[in-house]
Image (cartoon, rainbow, N blue to C red; front, side, top):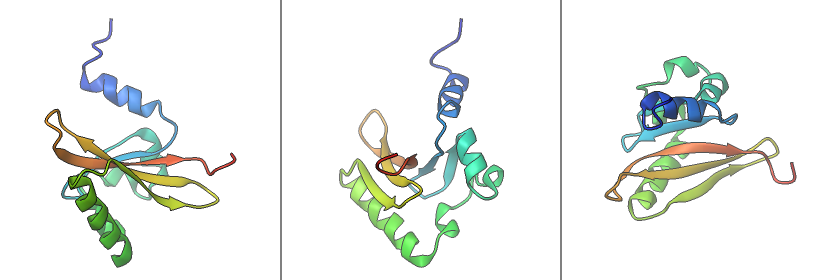
Length: 113
């Protein structure tokens, strides 16, 4: 029987998601990518431990910082990109005490798909 509280279980669970999932901590350091994210992002295998801000232009870096601040103030999720290919959301991740510990990017197909 599987240990459903194990780290391996949660990796397996997130790897079953077909859309990319990337988790970054409150310093914007990439701490986790599921299989789809490793395949989606250029150099996906090398992103763990990297500063996510370094992968973006100045406008995007400002947007990420601003959204993280809003999440620290209570925001749970925000749509940050919506185009013909996909919608991209940032979602707050909080610990058991409700403190922000990071965020993840999640994708959805475009509307009407």
